[in-house]
Length: 228
Image (cartoon, rainbow, N blue to C red; front, top):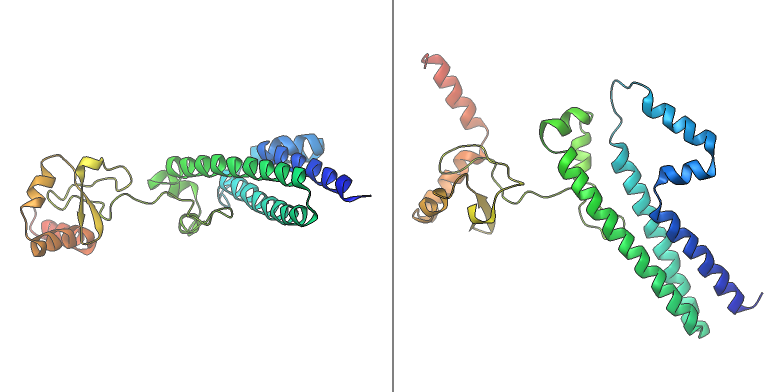
């Protein structure tokens, strides 16, 4: 088999791999082995007392790992094609690499949105087993190396002016201030202007007051002892 036919065969396999990446793993499973698909469906319907992680996240990570492997193979093939002077093959491989990158960006965005919606707060902790929430937060994309979980927009979960709880993942931009290299969030439009009037020492003291979890507990204990 000559080099031209070899590259044509490889490109055909690469195209099949790209199509497989776009399709959902369950669709592939149903096409390849109907009995395996039935077994997978039975597992989903079977009651579980403790979920062993998030199925969607596990599937997404496996798919991203496959993308990374396919990209590596395509990159190696591109180098071989360039060495052989097969310019047409190089062009086709570059198109396949662009397809893989497009799939990666789409999958990464979908997983990030899923983790934001399903694994934050009490709902996420109920769905996940003990310690699994921390593992999810440390997951990195096999394709780009970036963190899969959404990072909070601000460092605090309570307003340093009023002490009210805020969602550090969903603070409007107009309620955020930069302070000593960190972003601080507030609960209402009246708080940032009040914050701006404080000295740096006063700002640090107010931020420390809402960042330390022990202080609210002591305040609650003091409240109970005095029958307030």
